[in-house]
Length: 430
Image (tube, rainbow, N blue to C red):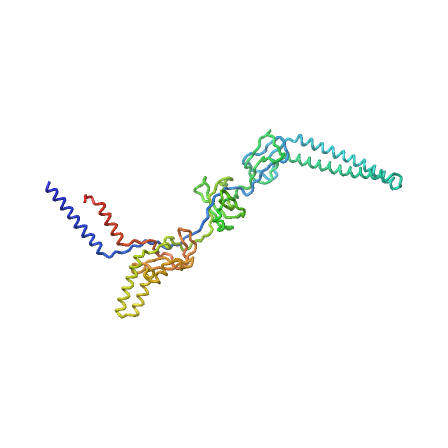
């Protein structure tokens, strides 16, 4: 028992000595900062506006009838291709044809009445010119003659209307397209007393569609005509369809106090995969650059910790003092200029504060940090273009392949973390 206890005590003591020596050796080393960097690369960058909408045909015509009647015959069905002027359906013509015959009879009667009144007028006019009849008789004959002419005109108008109504019994296609909907059956009675009933819905060529999207008022100012659009539909999630902005409508649409605007997108559909009524999710490219320098947005949001900047400033001051004692004025100025780039953002100097603050830079200029030759970092001013929140376009200040710092870790912090982890994972109960 005593022997086992002595072994445990000796093991604990040995581990303690080894840990002490390791920690002392690690702490004796100069703690170095490590930097995580990203490279400037050539790529594409864009700012987008997303919207959802419904796919529709460019032209949709609801074919109806202006007369009431019974559907006698239907000649087309759903999805049929029709030509302009093609017969779609016929209504029963019996009652309308009877009206046409009645109107024709009224015209014949009015014509006979006009002929009689004209003969009477011509006879009485000759007598009136010879002062053989009273003026009242002449005026009555003239009135009857003019009234007969008006009655004939009215009868002819009724006849024309009866012919048109009879023609309305024949339903023709107004456009070339596809029958999207057939809302009637043979033998059904349609009534056109107040509203024109819809018999067929016909859309034009389905190889060219449009997407009617709703864009929020916060984004509508970015949307312009002819901007490139990518969109997808649920039935083909793996296919990205292409299009462009064809119309931005000015009429606002307010729903639950949310204001949106209708934006129409062209949607070529050569394979006819897109169908009317599908819901589309569209991405409108409001700003886009191809084959430009792109940098991660983390780089322009990175700022070194204050402790690291103070350390760099202290090192700069130390080197400056050493070179001053050496009496090498020219070399000292050159070294100071090189080291100042590292420490110009130190919080202890006014110049560093200026370079560390992005508030003094124009909107399209940013400050990023890259590694220098001595293992430190230095700031570089860059000119930016498109910024989509994830990446940023670099117009000037960097070149392809440059490594830009996005984060850093102080070496002393890593040692402390490793030591703490080693203690927590010790298998011994002390």
